[in-house]
Length: 146
Image (cartoon, rainbow, N blue to C red; front, side):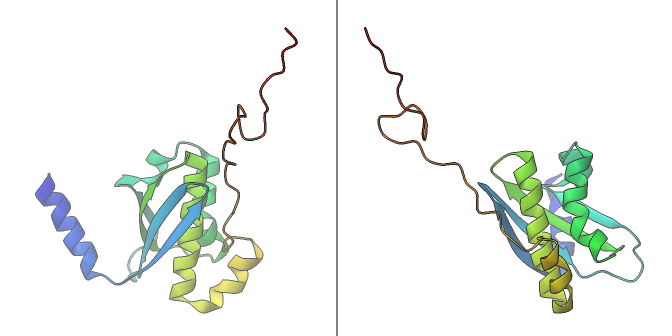
């Protein structure tokens, strides 16, 4: 099994690709979009070694990830993703940002279309840290009379 994985990785390293990083909350996605060959007519996305439809169960998450390809009407591409941290929805949005950045690195004329839809904007919202003497970030301790 290990030899098979090494062969696949070696074959992937020989191809040309564009790499980008996408982040959202605590999720970080390292995305590689491989330069498409003229024979393929479908989009293959591998997330942590699995097909993205297996990794993400919801259709909403599928549409989030494939959003950049649909807007640019790209029908043939291959993408590999290493993602970690956060929940599944934030991982999907981190992957979308990484794919968008990699596509812009490939062709800069796609930037205006992706920028209008907000695919190139990193969502900066994070969980607020807990404060000393409080139960949560803003929830104070409960006051007791007796």
